[in-house]
Image 1 (cartoon, rainbow, N blue to C red):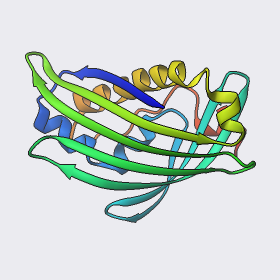
Image 2 (image 1 turned 60 degrees about the vertical axis):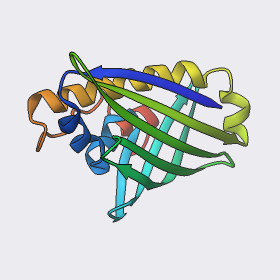
Image 3 (image 1 turned 90 degrees about the vertical axis):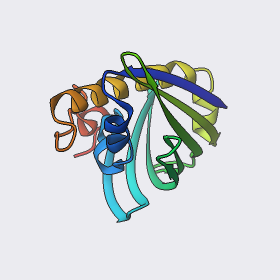
Length: 169
């Protein structure tokens, strides 16, 4: 399944690029995501919680940067996720491209997502709607970070912390 989302941030592309490639800083901008470990400069372990209707899934996710091409302002991440309490799995390639526009930077995110197991059965009809909402929240978080202090801003977490959303302590 291919998911396409885009948004605009009101900063120049070079400034947006510096934040976008700083994966440990942007992971918490995704609602339900927590950085668990930095393996090295191009690999991370992330805990990801997703609510699809009335059902919640928590995934242990391996995230790998496959490309970071500053010349064309394109990054590509690969995610491999396993449900922590179940048999669901997901694989995704997330490609982000930045382009300059009059008011700042247009960010396009194209996700190629494959779901396996129960998450595929329960989530098929809801994934597009959920991805649109996640993209909106992600864009808002990035915009806030870029406007407050692009080099050292703390991440602005979603209103409800991950642990409370998904019952983890």
